[in-house]
Image (tube, rainbow, N blue to C red; front, side, top):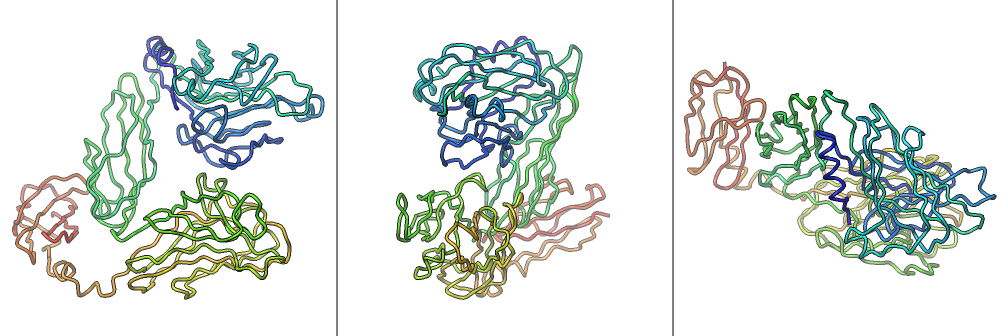
Amino acid sequence: MKKITLLFVSLLIVFSAFAEIKVETFEGAHNVSLSGSSTYVTTPTQSLAPSDATGLKWTTLLGTVRTGLGNFSGTAAVIRAMKQPSENAIGYGYLVSDSITGGIDSLWFDWNSNGAESGNWDIRILINDVEVGAINQAAGTQKTATEISEGNAYKYNVGGLDIAGKFVIKIENRSQYSGTSNKFRFVLDDLSWTSYVAPGEKQDPSFTYVTKQITKLLSADNFTNSLTNNSDGVVTYTSSNTSCATINPNTGEVDIIGLGTTTITATVAESENFNEASASYELSVKPDNWKIETFTNISNVCIVNPAATSCSQTPVTDLMDNNINWTYWLGGGNTQLFGNNAMYLRARFSTETSYDYGYVKSDSIEGGISSLSFQWNQGGTEIGYTYNVEVTVNGDVVGAITDAGEGAAFSTPKTFSVNGLKYDGKFVVKIENKSAYDGTSNKLRIVIDNLEWTGYESSPATSVDDNHYNQTKVYPTQVNDVLNIQSATKDFSVKVYNQMGSLIAEYKNANIIPFGNFAAGMYIIRIQSENKVDTIQKVLKR
C-alpha cells in the first residue's frame, strides 16, 4: 500500500498552484538488513543508498528504515522512545532527512504504532530544527494491514509553512518511557510535502525519470521510459550514443541500434511558470544471448551450514532467474549491501574443515558462455585477511578474487569479469570461497549480485546471417547527392537518422538513397534485412 490522502492533496493543489508534490516511500533507503531483526540503532545511522522515490538519504537514531513495520506493506521508518534514564546520553530517537531544495509549504504522512503501546505519544515535527507540529494523542489500538491498505492509517498533516530555499525534515519521538523494553514505536510511511513558491516566482518543475537504469536486448522493440513532469514547457529528447540507440526528439521513443550504453536525456524548456530542467537515464543494450542472475529468489536469509539451528544443515537449491537452479553452501541471502537479495558466502570455520568450502553453483546451462561478470562486496570488516575466491566453468578455473580484506564494506561494489571464454553447449558456473581462515567467526565474507554472462557461438563467421552482413555495403561514406546500398537480400529496409538520433527518412528495398536535399552533417544509416541482420554505417553529407 502506497497511498496519500486524496482530499488533502486536492486541497493543496488548489491553494498551492504549481507547487511540486514529493512523496517519500522510503523504498531503497533502508539502513539495516531489510529482512533482519527489528534493530533500533543507538548511533545516528544513514541509509545505505538514496531513496528510490526522492533520491534522499535518511538518518535514524533509536530507529530504522526497513520492511515489516507497523503493518505497512513496503519499506517504512520507525522511531522508538528513549529508555529513561539508561539512554539519556543518547537522546531522543529521530528520523532526519538530507538537505532538500525547493522550499516546503505543507507536510503530511501516514503513521501507526509497531506494537501494543499505552500512554501518550509525544511526536515532534521540525523543519530546520524549528518545531512546526506535534502528535500528542493517546497511544491507541494499532491499525491493521487491511485498514492501512484501505487508506485508514493514522494521518498527520500541517500546512502554511511558507519556508523557502533549502530545508531539513526531522521527526522526533519524545514520548516518555522509563522501562527497558522497546516501546512507543512510531512508524511512518508516505511522508509527503509540497514545495513553496513565492508569489510571482518561477518554480523548478518535478521532472525526473523514475527508472534510472534500463537494460534491453539488441532485438528488443522500441520503447518509452516513463517521465514525471508537471511543467508546461516543451520537452525534447536526445541520445548520447546514437550508435547504441536513437530517440524520437519529440516523443522520447527509443529505437535500439547496436550494443553498448547511452545516456538518454530529456530537457523541458523554461516556461511562464517553470524553470528549465533536465532528467536522464542510462540505457544498456546487451546481446540477445545475454543473461543475468540477480539471486532475488534465495529462500534462506540465514547461512546454510552444518551447525545451523534455524537454517538448513545441508546444501540448498533454489530455482532463480532464467528458470535455472542454483545450489549454495556456507551461504544464503543478504539484503543489506545491495538493497535486495544477494548471495552471501563465508569462509569455512576451523571446525568445518571436513566439509566443502562455501560455494554457489548453477545447474547445467544451455547456450555456451563467452564472458562472465558479477558485482561483489565484502560482508563486513575483513581487514587482516586475504580472499581466495575461485570462479570455475565446467571445473576449469577461469578467474579468482585475491584482494586483501578491508576495514568496512565498499561504498561502491567491485566488479569481477572475465572475457574470451570458449565453452560451447552446456556449462556449469561455480563460485567457491576457499579463503584460508582458522577461527570460528563469520569472516572473509563475500556478497555477490548481478551475475551476468553472454552465450557462445562456436563459428559465428560462417553463419548465414554474418555472410549476409559481410555482403551488405553502404557507399560512399562521404556523400554528395546519392548514397548506394548493396544488400545480399531482396527484402530489406533502410533508415536514415541525423546525428541527434532522430529518424528523418525510411526506404524499402531501395539501392539508391537521394541525399541531395539533406543538410550537411553526419548521418547514421541502418539497414535491416529479412533475416534481421543489422548493418550500421555513419556517412558524412558534404
